[in-house]
Length: 289
Image (cartoon, rainbow, N blue to C red; front, side, top):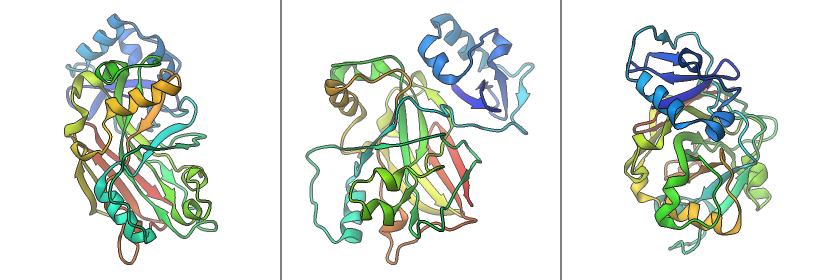
């Protein structure tokens, strides 16, 4: 099922016809926010929502609601993977004049998020601060229960669901400071959504087409099967050194086709519409202002 946050803190589940939804309250399920639901929901509540999502009776139109990020305030920083697709390694080699031919170890960095931006929300171009605004369509996972020292075989048991994340980046700031944290963490640089698709709907997250468009032009077009490091590997490795709390968002990297990879680069500007699309999840659409 697809669940989401709307109108600040309200929670909804899409109906059989995805132009309609049910508020959680319709099923007498009441939580103050998505994080609390992820941490505390019961099996009976989950099943009630799932069964309800297969219906259309008494559902409400999604027109007119304000989408928020599914988790507007993630637990801690968002954990991100860098260069987790070989074709993205190749394009960054060219842009940065380097020659990395293999990736033996994961690259992790954190993305500070004051408040994540929802579907149809605005991305601030920070045009007085950066001239190299870029997009990165990524599959993100949400941890469903605290985990520590988990094996790859059991790692997916700790996933609650999946969403789309646009790892918006200021390339000039990112590369100037060497560490990526600042250039990845400006306000509004974390669009996320529109929904969380629960893991039962995506038993294998490594079969999903992933695309991005800028003003309707296809820029990225790949499949999650081409990740260098798999989701079970990522969860297992991270959990060996830290406790991954329920609600933690982990973004799994982007394929080639980002703005910095073109010659000359094709960075975003105010007025641009960025769409990130992942099979079985949907389309995350945002405008640059």
